Amino acid sequence: MPPEEGASHFALLRLNLQSKYADISDFQSLRDIVCSFQPELIFHLAAQSLVRKSYHQALQTIRSNVLGTANLLEAARHCESLRGIVVVSSDKCYANQEKTEGYREEEPLGGYDPYSASKACAEILTGSWRDSFFNLADYGQKHRVLVASARSGNVIGGGDWAEDRIVPDLMRSAISKQALNLRCPRAVRPWQHVLEALSGYLLLGQKMLAGDKLAAQAWNFGPSEKACVSVEKIARTLQRHWPEITYTCEADPSAPHETGLLRLNCQKARKLLHWRPVWSSAESFRRCAQWYRDFYEEKRLRSEEDLTEYCQQAEQKGLAWSQ
Image 1: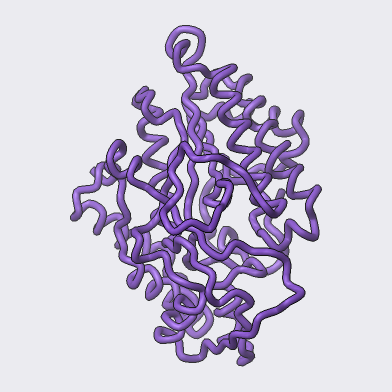
Image 2: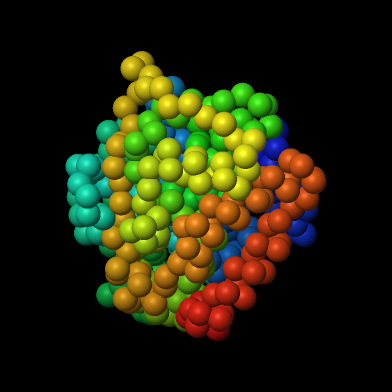
């Protein structure tokens, strides 16, 4: 569907590309669009992506994230040009036991809230379509499509104006001059800049176009252990880069359940894909705060500048996807 009303990073960028919109829960419309484009790669990021919203719109979340994923995978079967599909999932697809070590790709899936459950279901569907219709044993003979899922940590970065997300909410506090109350200040998440996650998705796409069957499985893309910090710490760090940010820490007993501790183990991506983050957590937080500060105070977009510098630094570090 088209972006919701309000600030839109997509609109602000004024990209020169062709766009078509459809309801992902409408199979026929989705199939028609996919077949009309005849893509080589599909990156599936369409979703209802907010945990708290899923409590209020549970069925919509299931339609978008579960039925929508099934529709996309089924539509892909009718696209002769296709070489690969990257289904973007979430770190919240795991059956979270609040354990201190990070979750590995082979660990059980699950979900307390409707959003997390929907992402676990989407992962199961992705594996099912890969086994049933895009089986690796038949690759190059009966089909030539590789299917992967990518489970990323909590992404931050400019251009996000969603409600009930800590970074956009903190940035709004700076503009409104009203303190934001942190509902779960001690909750720990694997924070990473959005460009880190995107580099992992694009790396999978590169490998799919090259016919590398290794790509066709589930992958975690997340930060180092040092970047797994509390909500209060990220608020304090962002505040150092934009002092107008203010917040309080008062527990809300009526708030719906949210996971207290979540970490990812990304050793598989580091070992087999040679993927690793470019920016440290400190650099990611700094750039995130600067993006919003420049946007609100100077009406300036840093997106292209950040992307250029990110790619340059990735090349300097010799990362495989940047060569």
